[in-house]
Length: 531
Image 1 (cartoon, one colour):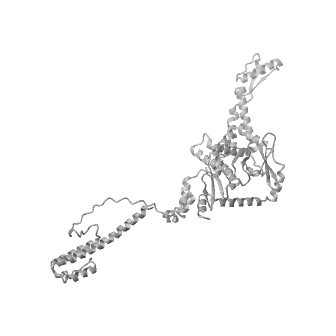
Image 2: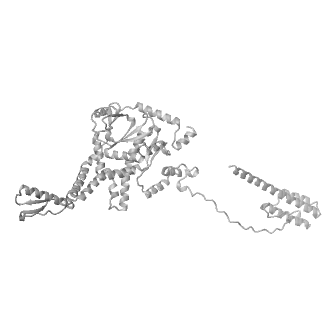
Image 3: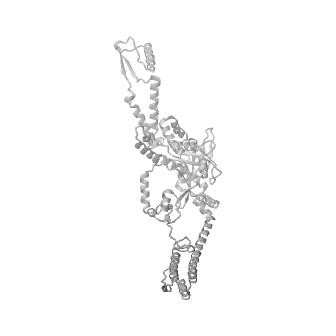
């Protein structure tokens, strides 16, 4: 693998050569696929024993009729539809996100008629109501990238099992009496677990049908009671004596009219022969509201666990947050994974191997616990390992990455600039040309020159000790040269000339060192200017 391929893989991309190799492998696996014998026999048995697809239209119609079911479905489908979908590539044991992958763009705009949110909402609602949902992919063959994706209601589609192919094709019923054939590679079939039929999913509404029917009947009865009888409880008028037919007809008409107007019916000429009895009981006695709440509890717990407590008017903030965490983990995240794993298995292989699709994880995380786990992890792992596990970051790039986190000190900060220091001027006791203590002479040179000046004064005074002057800083060769000349000189002019020559020699040696340092400084400055 070349350096370009390595860099592309690092960022989640693949070269054209790699893509062609991966597609060839996928084609080979597809051609070599053979279903087990037992599965072929099962498909053959179910080929002519598939359910009537109209039952799925009836199930979906409950979404229109039941306010409880509609609320649950709308909340879930909106949450999934507004979540971000990402495509990543497996690189070794890690995943690399691919920014703006082609399928991400397609999912945001799946077809000219639907937006991305509408497309996902239809998928979630159909999957939860029917236990099945269909995507139709507009592509040339099973190995081509789709250009469009369309949702199809499951009441209009039915798979056709086959002994050799498992599913031979799908039948589409447009509603005009025709039947269209859809190839398997054109269809993405989402389905739930069904213990009785592995080719179609099982709707969760089948376990709720009696609850929803009862809820709808309760609402209808309550509506009729208020719309036609003004909310008055039904009662019985009991007559002691038999009433003739003409009078009986008039009494019934007056009773119905009074009930619709929520009025007490007034009767004349009945005496003690008429009594009033309450036949029905009030809504409070029937616990009508409690019955509706129980229906809502059953539907929400079956379709969207955690949603009831999250929306409860009596929930505290803590209870609502806990319910939100339950809803996110038990309802929202599994629904996202159903869609993401189906995309990964049926669509992303056309874009290349080792591609994984997933939604942004909505599950609530205990940040305190997560930080404690990270702290414990840092005790036995290096800085680079911690960055990769918790932040998916690249290695830091220096020796600190191989150290434990506790061993890595804080990033060094630039030292603060030192305030200007006041330099005390040294009293100049030497001739101007020597300038002891100046910037041109280092400490050793200054001391050597001072020692020569002391030796000069002794020689000019004619002291005999000048020939045996004990030197400390003056170079040995210079001191021996001066001693040899002092033995033959008597006048002050020649003595000064000897010491002046020695002093100049020391000054020239110090200047050459300064010139070397200045040259090095200029060279470094020139190199830095070229960066």
